[in-house]
Image 1: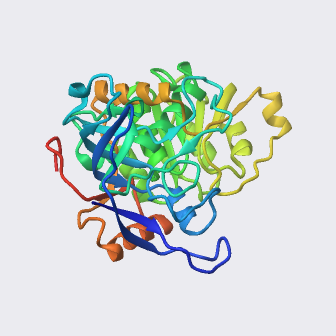
Image 2: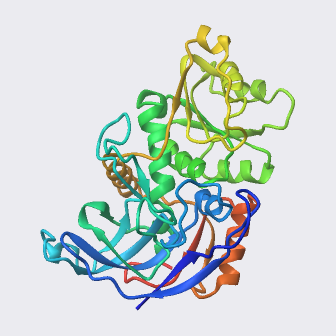
Image 3: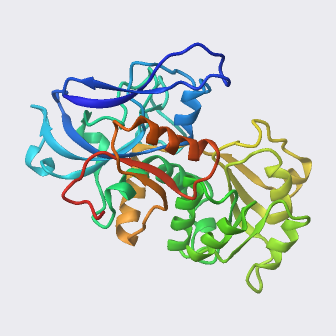
Length: 365
């Protein structure tokens, strides 16, 4: 049997309701065709999980386990798996979505990109003890990562990689480039920080929290400012290395007045890569951005090709995702799991929030 976390339906309007979590016991799946049977050991939360509980995410269902991020150990294989011995006993991380193979522009599948966990568009979620998944949708977990770190990597790692490398571009995200990451503290911004530092870029951050800015500096950022300070843009520009007068790229998850601020910060032809709009769903595009040839690029998660590129980069550079808190009491402890959700709901975290419910031989914790 396999325990799994689901949402339970209660009455309430979108944005006002907060669906409770429940534990259900499911039959252990039997892998079919090219599927692998994975015994999950850890999963991590994303903002979409909170949005699902608030009925603010499309396609919500109460019949699919929660969770888009996870790590586990392969314990079985379907009859059409190409090389079962290659996978048996391997610790793997799961590609968090399907429908997007390798196009740089977006998902090729007419159904669009479909993300794991809690919706009717994909019938799997990582918050369960066992799941079956096609062998093409897993990567071996980097050996240097703990189970918690491996579970924290997939969704934010893929989003951060595409926003920084694919969208901002190689030139604007590597040695010699100056990169600004807004709203440091969330999973995407922090993993993008790890990537940019490893690529040799000079990285700066913004936050309303001096503590978060200091932690970012300890992780390799050159400096940062509070976006609540008057004239913070000038203060940031003054921090740039000698001879550098503007940023090459801004990686932003806030939206709102991001274009207006970026015009003051970016070089002519610089890139504003936007992977979210937590402040406002609208972002005016100003004439000043046109005159400065600012390139605004929307960025979502990413393709299967980008997922592999990201994991390979993490392996090669021994990158560790930043973990805020790990819950080790398992899937049965709904009260503690609710508390973990509350951290994200209130924005208390600095890094990823993880629940462990098993141990693999490769676990470093």
